[in-house]
Length: 239
Image 1 (cartoon, rainbow, N blue to C red):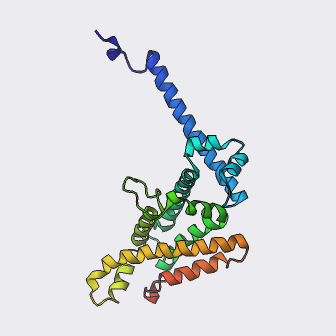
Image 2 (tube, rainbow, N blue to C red):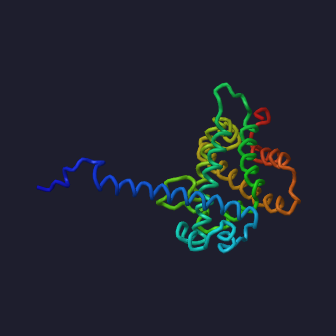
Image 3 (cartoon, rainbow, N blue to C red):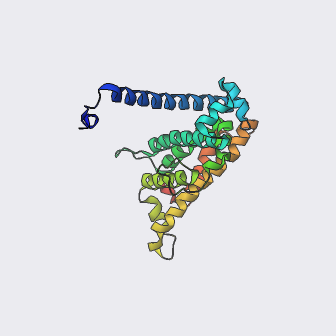
């Protein structure tokens, strides 16, 4: 009789092996997060052109340790990008989350979303430039990806949906009033939302470079102007 098959879970060597495996996995996760944190600080201090050698030296370790966890520089960029997008997604979702009693006009909702992005860029233009320049975080939509933070393309799709949900029927009604065939409004609205994300991202890239050079316009001014451009199709009374 095979007694091993009937050995109670959590006893003997099986418990030890499972415990070691769990502890090792927890160690790897913690170590990976530690390396990501140090890489963020290194890029912020050194700049977007920081090499793996410089990042590792700043982190007090070797390139081989980073390669063990992230494969190569693109892998590190992908991991940093996903971490950055996850933080940004949570902040944007919070910015557009509206209480039923919230009477904020569309312009205020859009302004909150734009400001969240620009604040992140302003805090570290170098980190923003580093992660958006890495091949792994492109505008593609990997078929195997499950998270909206896996690429800029998936993230843009996700933020577009958040924007449409936050604004409710206002954009649909405004667009329908301007089309020969109002029934097309709902479909075309997705193009508008996606173009909003592209506009803000492109403006943020330009602004990030000017922030680093000390020539950027005031953030509040840029938020107001981008909000006005984004909502130019909307009727004036909405915000």
